[in-house]
Length: 165
Image (cartoon, rainbow, N blue to C red):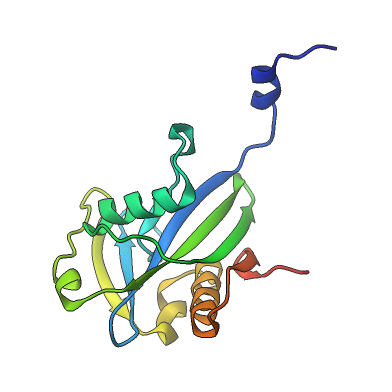
C-alpha cells in the first residue's frame, strides 16, 4: 500500500490549539474579558486560537490574540500551564497559558476591547475565579498562579486538573 504524504497527514487525528495570557494588576488582580459569543456567562483570559495553518507558534498566538483583544502588545513571559481538554462533540484541544506580567496603570488605562468579540473587561481577585470561569479554565488559572508563586512551571493539566503522572 502506498500513500502520499499529504494523504497520510490529512488522515491523522486533529486537535485545536489556543494560547492566552495571565495579565495582572499591581495589587494581584487578574485581567479578564467577557466574550459576546458565549451563552453560558463565562469569561475568559485574553487569548484565542493559534493560527497554526500560518505557522504561528503558541507564544506568537498569545501575543497576537492579546493585542487584538485588549489593544496591548504584551510580550509573553514564562509558559505557566499546558492543558489538554476534551469534551463530547468537539475535537480535543490544547491550551497554552503564558505569564502576561504585571500591567502598569498606564497599560490598564490603555486597554481597548475588540468589540466584535468582547463586551467588557474587569480586574478580579484570584479568589473570584469560580464566579467567572468554568471549572477547566478556573483550574488553569489556579495552576498558573501556583506556578508563579512557586517560581515553577509549566503545570501539566488535563481538563483543568493536574495530569496523572
